[in-house]
Image 1 (cartoon, rainbow over the protein chains, first blue to last red):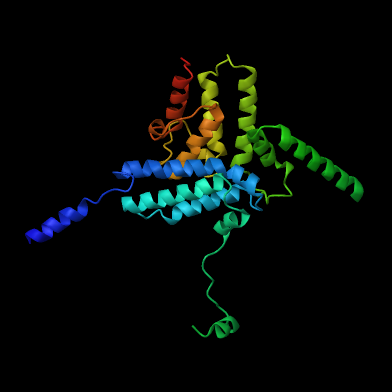
Image 2: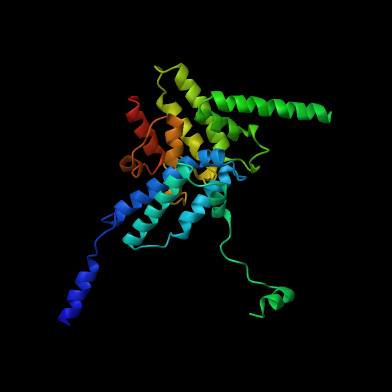
Length: 124
Length: 154
């Protein structure tokens, strides 16, 4: 009984990655969003991608919405760090057009719906 | 006829290349979004937040550059704030007054709020730090904040 309380107390105080509380994590996320938002017109110009600035901003919003449900502060910090790494690579033009266009690529193959596609895929 | 069109397009392309070499980046981006390079990026036909905002940004910059000493009045600030908010495509114009809360009344989320604050920064030409930005939750707050920053007294 006592050991369970001790374990629970120990688990609650994990060493933070960057932010100590939710407010700080929230500020980091919003700053990252702002930095990306401001950078997008220059991305469209430098990489000459066939997308408009609005489409890129929509994609930015989608990427942030993907992780909207996350509540663990360390996970949020890690995501922010990854976002900042991507931003740095994009700003310094270490990426290339293909890397930027990868953001717009679907990561899942759509499941086959009609008979022939299901047959060719193997009747899953 | 076709040759004439191609000639015009060629002239536009040449002039835009020259523009790229001479003008600073921000204006190039503004001009580009106004549609000189419509054949390069797939510009959506719907009324774009960016296009109207950039037009107001370019107009505001020109105005401020020519008259650095003239300060806007509180009424002008109110107009500009409301105009920027109306241009935001997620805001319904009929519900927008000076006292509508962005998050509660207009149903925007925090990322939309960040976008609105950025639009205000572009409109008025000065940076709004995060600590202040998270307190500016209604257009009236923004008007008061800008008036304080620009030292305009009613």
